[in-house]
Image (tube, rainbow, N blue to C red; front, side):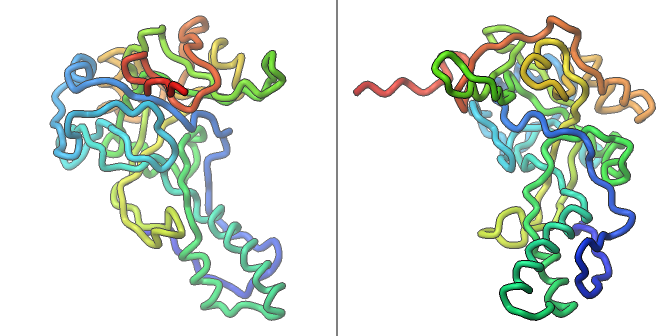
Length: 288
């Protein structure tokens, strides 16, 4: 599957491609941690096969956008635990077109001439798409194609971060604030969706690549997350029943899971660092 193609016209300031939708919700969780094992996953998710890429499922104490990370997905009639997908679903064609348009305007100003239709078409084709990590607006036509059970997945996590812009006692921003159910960081899942074999430019250094991609849904925050990020939190599944509904139910039933955790659920377990996990998973401090 390739990113959507459009007929390209002579470049005009403000030109937009009609019919292209994107996620209108705010960006939220762009960093999380997963330190678990296959046995723990089996306690919450039924009947999945383990792909060879999983290995011994080493801990990932900092999962950033475009990283590969474990997901359990529906694929070809089976349920599969895999690390074959990169975090960040395709951005909308409209957003990519407009990004290419801005670059083209700068190039035109520098060269002192208009780009040809073919030159601009190639810029759009090669426009980097770093991916959309969080999906809020599930009514958008851009996302609806991946809402069926065959494209749903669950994303295991043990803690996740929101960035706190408020200043601490030292006058610096508090930075990454990590949330978990408690200090032991028990396993739960984000409600995710995935796209198979999407062709795009993720990084200029890579060029065009074809890879599986995933993201997870967001919703209004509960009071704990809302104290740091007032606009949104990830959609979190905590029971085998919720996981099974997300992976199998028609969208009319599954969409009810796009809701916040109750107030008071979750707590802050760490502040001001880019990685998180229980003590046994964290790097040893450097002794000078």
